[in-house]
Image 1 (cartoon, one colour):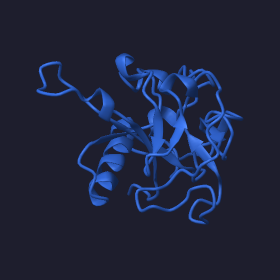
Image 2 (cartoon, helix red, strand yellow; image 1 turned 180 degrees about the vertical axis):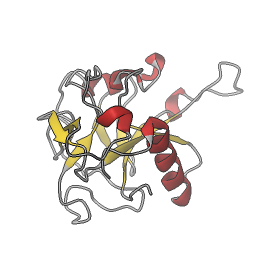
Image 3 (cartoon, one colour; image 1 turned 120 degrees about the horizontal axis):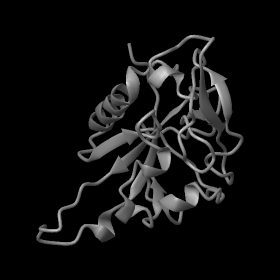
Length: 183
């Protein structure tokens, strides 16, 4: 997907739609920062110590916070909503993810493709190379917004303290990738 995602809301909508098509009933958001939100704050502060898992429930990181401390990701695959292994599938020839942040998860001043609304080669967005056993925000650098890169989707839960049972043990941050273009 290019840097023109119709904004963060457009990318969030794409994550939501793909999740629904894959029969997920929870909320997924794009792993993107913007001019109003740092990437490390996409997940609620109370959930940042929760393990991060892939779609099969395999642990990628011990916590959300580990991502922004440059901890290495476990040597296991990340899957798309249609269960393709992102690291080896040719549908993603360039193994880079859009995110718009520095390695600590702070939004880049200008590195988010004009609020994720530009596919111009004259504009840039922050992106990182991904691979098994590497930190998720490894090799973060500016990329032309015209490039077709991966968008990571994360599952987020909104829990009520008035719920009849505790959701904490069920909270997982699941990585999946959005693998279609927004038109």
